[in-house]
Length: 195
Image (cartoon, rainbow, N blue to C red; front, side, top):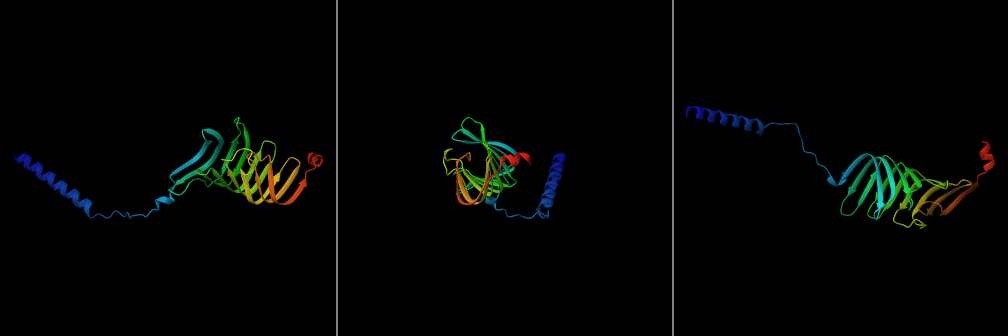
């Protein structure tokens, strides 16, 4: 009985000491207020991913950083360190390549917003360069509403260069309409070959 009483008293003293040591101790930790809605739902780095529409792969994305944001009113992907996109045709052949410094993809409406040093290149040799470009991936491939911009655009074809303020085009930029054409320039293939 004496042994049990000593064990009980020692256990009770240890419990009191533990409670006292945890009770009034200042750990130097303060609370931090965080706006949870401002944080990404998903963050990824060094990503290569596929984009599909109705189960059909339409593009491959390569990016250093992708953040996904979602709330009741909006849902979008953000690519703050640039993006490279290869767009596929119906036979899964690359029919366009796109580079941009920054990009947003609004998944509920399937709309891409590409910003800063945007370059689009198709398989027939047309290169489109601008500071902002929109791509509505839900539009049919031949729709002239699929790709558009209201900014200054330079379109280089194998034999011509167009500059314009604003344009719209089909998904592979093989057909396009210029809004405010500012300059058309023929490229002399003979002089280009000599240089």
